[in-house]
Amino acid sequence: MFRRLMTFDEARRVIGEKLKLNVLGEEEIPLLEACNRVLGENIVSALNIPSFSKSTVDGYAVKAEDTYGAEENQPAKLTTVGIVNIGEKPKISIGKGETVEIVTGAPIPKGADAVVMVENTDRQDSELHVFRAVTRDENVMKYGQDIKKGDTVLKTGQILNASDIGVLAALGFVKVKVFKIPMVAVLSTGAEITEPGEKLLDGKIYDINAYSLSIAVQESNGKPIYLGVVQDDKVELRKALKHALASADMVITSGGVSVGPKDLTPQVVNSLGKPGVIINGIAVKPGKPTTIALVGRKPVICLPGHPTSALLMFYLIARPIIQSMSGRPTSQVKTVKALASRRMFSARGRRTFVMVKLNPGKSSMQLAEPVETGASGAITTLAKADGFISIPENHQFIDTGEEVIVTILNEAS
View (cartoon, rainbow, N blue to C red):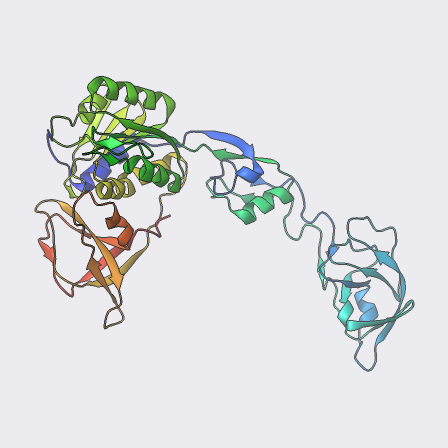
């Protein structure tokens, strides 16, 4: 079935060369829907922010020179001539020896160049005693101090967060241009698979993969299209895959990629269009049957049916593809150094990924303890693991106490 297993590094190189992944274009969306999306344009300010000089404290707007020399026992004495409220243009100006009451965020009136905090004053009717001198521009945010007209405040490719959305709102945006999110069709194959919610008959199992992989697509910033379960039948599978390709930018399947008589997915995918299958098996454990095709410009990732294998290979292969298509930089995964708690063997000639849990050790380094898989179909293996160790193809084993690099699974977003 497998013409030639590619090494893991070969497979990644072929993916990079053949898929030539580009973003899918841009779309304009409401600002309130833009958080965690990738910005599709440079944002150049058409405004000065703030658009007026304003007070940063509650207090009194003054001419700074009128407060020079003010002390606790010898306050400066000023005459209060009015008040400036927030949200209104000042209708008053101050002269020498005069002041106006002002609140945080209110515009600085003409003639004033500083604000004295209310805590440093005492007022009797219109007479204000100032017990601390201020300097010019103290407690004032000046016109254009935050953002100047013409400044590039956000750049293409940024992942928008709450503060970025706030900047856009401050500039008057109600919509913003972002890169499109890839639509990813997800389906499971297998005569033994039953949709959750239906009666579970003897010999059947509920569909795990379509659900876990759909959520993995979401976590990778794609939009899953759940297509459910397809039986191991060429006609039905071909029909389902054609529908998937017509409705999505990428397709992910699970099951039907090994060497059994019902493992039809690679040959059916290969018949759907050129160039067809570009990778038909990877020299890894788990995940050897993983098959990758390209139908036109749309990637089709065919994962093994075993839940642990499917999720791990999604993480290693599919996730970076989805991120590239969305214009998002490939996640920088977190790794930690640890000591192997016991000997871990590789599969001869294959890159081996060993799921491990990190436990405290006697030294400052943690111990990497292999997670017992029980069986290759166990869904709990990844849930129990903190990460994985990669054993190269040419290594027979990792010995007890050997220093290893653990890739952390739950911090790869």
